[in-house]
Length: 254
Ligand SMILES: Cc1ncc(COP(=O)(O)O)c(C=O)c1O
Image (tube, rainbow, N blue to C red; front, top):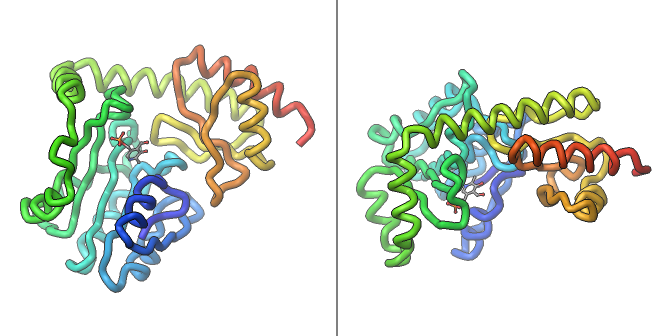
């Protein structure tokens, strides 16, 4: 059971394993609709909660999530994906890792692909109770992590500058981008991640193509939000290039 829209790769893996995927639309505030997800998972299975959520960059409030986990049926596994944990600074956001000791049905996933800048190097981890880890280990490729990724991950953890610097750079570029988009009259889903979902008020697909023709690659179409563009926050100079192209593209007729 997953939100719609959410990180799609997970749903693909589930289907490959023969599971049926149930999608539950996000709420009006782009949070996970936890009661509806709980109802959809009545017969067990896995509830996938991406927090902050990809592609909306929105969060599901900590108190709602805590209550939901506390009341969940022990037969239903809850997977909380905290890939974007380091970018969230809202008072309503919190990691669910501390709850694992009391909840054998909870798994929290993290990755080195985001704040640590290691996308493509393939390093991440899950936190869960030992019995759950034992069950998952049977499905793990025996050589899933390579030595390059391990060395880079260890070096990242040892570097006290890595996380605060990434947070600071992301926030500065994101604030700049959002300020400029506000000035142009384009609303965005409030972002707690390193990307922004922008309401174009017109279909995104032709805009994606027109941006590409100007050498700016933006996110793909997310069918649940056909008028929104997902944009990764890069360096400030990259955001400036984006804005220059975006202004020209949006000035053309829809
Ligand atoms: C929510 C979420 N989880 C996991 C991942 C993938 O992480 P990894 O590169 O470690 O496979 C991504 C990458 O885009 C993501 O957005």
